[in-house]
Length: 563
Image (cartoon, rainbow, N blue to C red; front, top):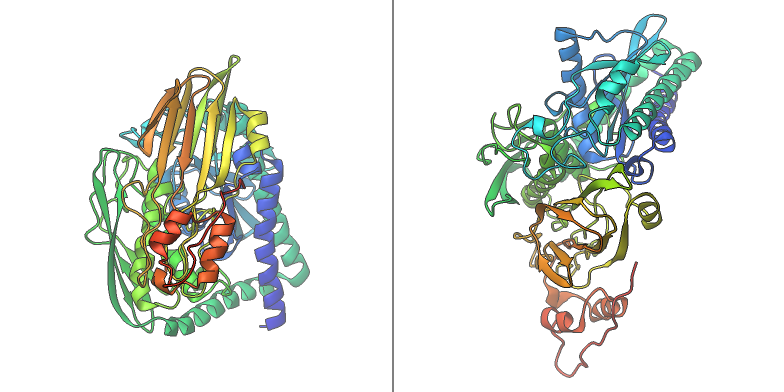
C-alpha cells in the first residue's frame, strides 16, 4: 500500500466527515443545530467499522458504531432493507444509542452496485413530542412518555424524500416544520459524505480506497497499543453518583483493568435501572469509555475502529448504564453520561496520574423551554457550560462545555429574536472553581426572563449535592444552583424539575466549577492576584483558600465582569 496515498485518503475522509457537519449546520432550521451545532457525523466501511469522524459531540460519536451495527442488524431482521439509493432513519435509543431527541440517518454508499461505505449522522431535534415541550422530561416513566419512537424507516429513496415517512416523525412534534427542515439538513449531510467518498474512489480507485481503510485501522490500532505504555498496569476502581430527583443517589461503579494488550472497563456494582429518565443506554456508556480512553492515549491518533479496538466495555444487564427497553433514557444521555466520564477519569487517575485532571463541572445543565406564543407553538433547548478541572500543568478552562458535549452556546441575539424570553445575565461565576495549585475553571451564570404566559420551563442538571472532586490535594468545585424569581420572591428549585411560568418570571442557572489540582497553599501568589483582578475569585475566598504568608498584604480584587 502506498502510504502517502493512504494518508491522503485518510485525511480526506476526516474532512469529508467535517464537511458533512458543515452541510448539516448550514441548512438546518433549528437554533439548536445551526447555532449550537448539536450534531455529529461519521463514515464507516461496509462491515460497520469506523473509518473517520468529525470532531463533533463525544456522546454521539462513541454511540454511532454501536448504533450502526444494531441498526443494520435490525433492518436485516425486520426491515426495511438497506439498499442502494435509500436513507434509513431511527431515533430509538435502544437501537441507535443516546435518546429520542437524537435522530440517526444512515445512507449506504455504493460504487457500481457494490456497497463500499456508510455515511451516518445524528442530530438533536428540539422536540419529538412527549410530556413536556422539548421532550426531555424529569418525570417520564417509560420511553414512550418521552416522545415519538421512530423505528427504522426509509425517509429517502433514489432522489426524493418519502414524504409520508417524514410527516410520520414531524407530526409528533410541537414544531413540525422545524423537524422537517432539520431532517432535510441531515439528508444533505449524508449526500455530501457520499459524494466525497465517490470522489475519492474516482480519483484513486476502489482497490486503493479499500486498502487505505484497512491500513488506517491497523495503523491506529498499532499506535494505540504503543500508547498503552503510558498507563500504569493494574486494576483500578472508582465510584461516583448521579443525583436522583427525589434526593436519592444513584451509584456508578467502574473497575478499569489496564494490561499491555487492552483496557477493560466493567460497571459491576452500578445501581439498578430506574423508572425515571436517568438511565443511559449502553451506547452512551460506550461513548464515555471511548472519550476517556482517547483523552489518555492522545487525540493525535486518528479516531477510527482501530483506535478503540483495544477497549472492552461490559455492564450488567438492567443496571443504570445498560438498561432494558422501555426504561426512559432522556436524562441518561445528557447527565448520567457526564458522571460516567467523571468516574472513569477518577479510576484512570491512579493509572495515569500525570494525565488526568480534577473533575469538570459534571453536568450539561439542560434548559428545555416551550409553550405557545401568539397562538404559535415553540420549543427551545440548550446546554450551559461549566468549569474544567485543574490539571498538573494548568488551570481549568472557565465556562466551557465539558467532557461528553462540546456544543456551542446559543447566541443571546438568536434566542431573543426567535423565542419569547430575554437573557438578563450571562457571565462567569466567581468562586465556583475549586481551589488548588491549579485552580478549577469557574462555571457560568445564565438568567432567563420569560415573556409569555403558560411557558413550560424544564431544568435537567446535576452536581447539586455532590461537588466536582479535586485531585492531589485540590479542593472541590462549586455546586450547581437553580433559582426561580416570581413576584419579587426568589427561591431555590431542584436541578431536575419542570415549572409552569408566566410572563416576568425569572430562572437563573448557576453551573458548577471544576475541581482544583494540588494543594491551594502551593499556588503562586501572582496567580491568585490575577484571579482577583479578573474577578474569578473574591477577596474573601482568596483569604480563606489561599492563606497569605506572614507580612504580606491581603489581596484585593474587583467585581466580576460580564462575558
